[in-house]
Image (cartoon, rainbow, N blue to C red; front, side, top):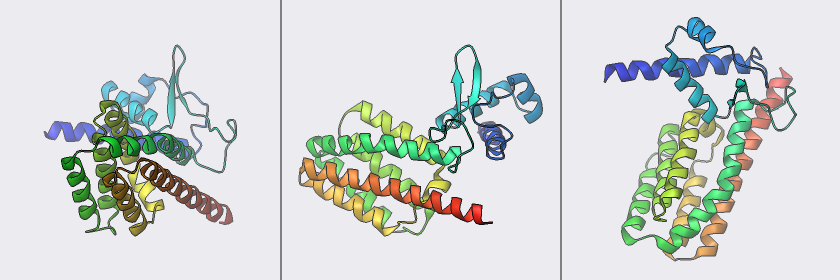
Length: 236
């Protein structure tokens, strides 16, 4: 068990070091990452830890693998590769929420159709748990994940379940950043409760609309928070 923890710390260090190089401009958008052997020596890690770090960075939307060419820092959509106002990591977060805007209303519809009484009980328990400590960033992040995962499980469609697990793996990888920007606390709980009520009432249209409104608000809140940070940074 100890060796597993040590390995986790090592590939987390790989992620942190490469993220720092990207944010400082040492690895600009579109640039190739150094060869594996060079990074292994520079970071003093094993090949397996390095590749696990690469996998996480790809999941976070910071790098991409191009067959027969290698690994590259992703290029921002907004500026065609020039240094933009939105840091690459923040742009990846916004892209993730854009994808959720397509996915989550469909899940709410299927949950309204197929949720069993035991599914509804599980969702209600998560909402009750959420309300016990909305001030805690860690607690909100975990309860948010639990709510959306149980909603997906309530569709009884394993594809939805696996997609939600994947998207929230990305969210949890940067959850401190995301939930610090999402200073919504009671709002997100109220929105979750409204979606739950629509599902209990088997109101398909209302469930879809409420979920779409919820994800859109999350997107706007993140977008505004990132923009305000950019303004503050440029004023220094």
